[in-house]
Length: 295
Length: 265
Image (cartoon, rainbow over all chains, first blue to last red):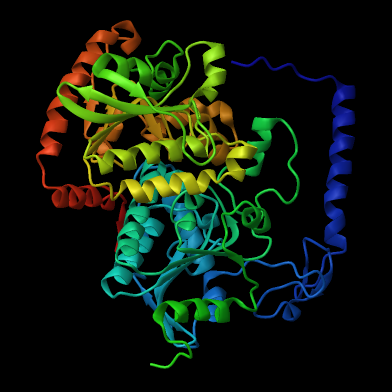
């Protein structure tokens, strides 16, 4: 048992006033709270109307990219009305019997309207048919558990069977810790499915978005024939704080950005959000041989 | 009852036999090869060719040191990308010459350094997962100490995965697990109990096919017993795998990893 010594009155008094001060400090932002129709950019601190963010969700002042959820991403990339979802009913279980995992999943499902952290389906992009997988950082930071692994594996298998290219928009905090070793095995499972798709001579494009880290970086995210990234996205294997802990010093801001990965040879091309659908269409067309999209 | 954290402590013992101990005991004429042909030679990974009885094989290991000096040289058994790329190079060489592959795994994880990130730690691990799934030769990996996350998996996408009785295999160290999920690294013991990281737990989960017995308190107490037992099992299993048609072997390897995951539909 740890020894507990009751503090003397003076210590308590000074602690109380510290806490009061801290509480007042915390209140401050509330006083100048921004209206619900507005949003504050975490980069430039510019406050602006949410509508100005637009479909692309880019800060009108500093061009910072706000994260897109899977629905917004699909709307932005797939031809209107072309997306048909696959395997939409998969639901997580609790392989380790991890305390409160089911409750956490239920809560996230209610909050996001998603079953888990990836949406997969078939769509056309500029008329070019492709399998599309989009991870959603709003669902447990798009960590990869059994459902994410299984849906992506099935997406690869569907693409291989139907001789289709596959595009995966990656983003993830890494493995789904609550599923432990089962989550680790998803890395091997998805990569093996990607290998079969590759061996069939089919095209796999990964688009790395903010943030792509951990076990997702160390598996399918880095296995695309073509690796695209959004500007400024965080991309890396080990977490920044872990690396800082290893070297015992601060890392520069550009460490593990898309630009850093491009510089070091791990990203083929950085594509802006505006250009993304056109660029993906063009890459798909060069691989299908339909230069002007003619069938 | 002993908790899972006792296994963690045994698995991490500095006196625990290393990959080279097993390689030198089990195989004849081990010749070590160096380098990834791209950047350098990572001494946290050892590999080369050897005889398993009368069969030519390729052997690889993630190597920890036993002294501080050796640990510095071996980077405490935490490979950089060039380590995984050396491993892949030697595995592709094994494939070319039709040699089965035997990997000894003992790492707390892939090295989280600046250089490792600059040279693509994620890509190196990912590439191994993809390539190993398709290697046209039989393979067995044995976790002999720590099997730390992607850094271990990068050499464990094999036809069979075995563990020594007191070794561990997990998504993260129990300390890291506790600090991520409970914001409290001191709850590592508790984490170890829920993580299912012991050899027997993983056997039940189907993550490994075989658990190799160790002397009471750990294999450092009777190295010959564990090493000889492992050798006899390796000889039999490699014979079995080598007798299988390669197409069937690849199908079964795919199915082995394809089966992991728990979900409802």
